[in-house]
Image (tube, rainbow, N blue to C red; front, side):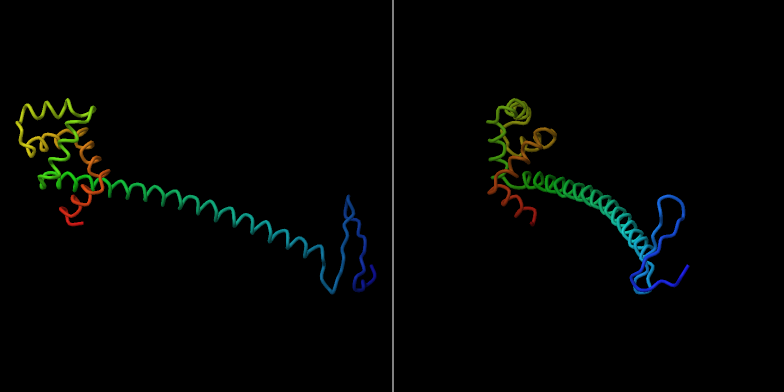
Length: 156
C-alpha cells in the first residue's frame, strides 16, 4: 500500500461490503465517526438513567408531600376540634349548623336529647362521633370567619 496524501482515500477489502478508510489531516475518519457514535450512545444511556432516577425521586417527593399535607391537615383538624370546645360562639354556630343540616340533624337531635340543651355538652357528644366531628370541622374550615377565630384560639 502506498503512502496516502491529505484528502486521499483508499479502498481496502475486508469482507462485504467494502470498507473505506479516509485519511484527512492525519486522522482516520472512520475511527473518529465510531468514537462520535460511541459518545452519542453513552450520552443517550446516561440521559436515560438520569431521567429514570429523577422520576423515582419525583414520585418519592410527591408521596412525601402528600403524607406531610395529610399530617398537617389531621393536626389542624384536632386543633379545630379543641377550639370548638373552648369557644361558646364557635360551639353555638357549629351546633346550629349541624342541627339544621339534613345529613346531621337526626344524630345531633339524639345527642341533644341525651345531654340536654347545653351547647358545650352537645359539642362534646358531637366530637365523640367521627362523622359528626368531620362535619363540624369541615364547617369551620369552610367558613373563613370561624376558621380565623379558631386559629386565634389555638395560637396560629
